[in-house]
Length: 88
Image (cartoon, rainbow, N blue to C red; front, top):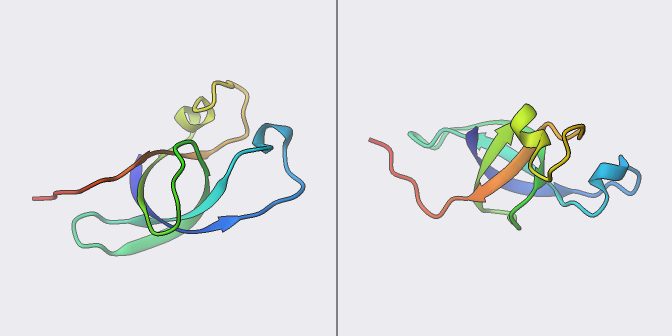
């Protein structure tokens, strides 16, 4: 799991049936300690996040189960919106 910044969205008119009706967002990984930005990836939104928000992203097998399907093609999913961060 990592903290990311939502920087945009993806519109795909043709996609896997299990992605129909789900919002796809472009997330950039962020280092909470120094704010440095990392790589981009597309994640399926499960919490109603929007551009400019910091989010929690889970990857791999846990992401596949976010919507209840064990055979999902989902590799990254947004599972939380961050209200605040504190790093010491």
